[in-house]
Image (tube, rainbow, N blue to C red; front, side):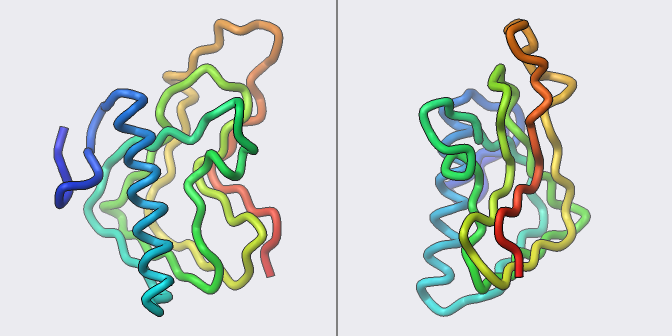
Length: 135
């Protein structure tokens, strides 16, 4: 595990740390936007983000990118879904926002590490980026 500037912890982590990673990155993007910054660059990062929560709307549990915003990643950026058993997860959400650009980076699902033990569903709804209103 690697700690990035006292915040995001890289590498394989617990669910609690992966949720904290999600909260930190989302809050940092929102804070940047509050300060009038509309372009957010991520270079070297390889971290897991917990984006499943059966008690939340799927977009609320996801890593949300604010509107009027550019998220720019490089080939060194790896954003990963924390392995889970939930049937319906979304890694990145652009929910009720406009004018968003997401470029570069690698988005990794949990297909190879997903817990498929719940046989009441076929777990087909996991998604990496989810856009409900793109203009």
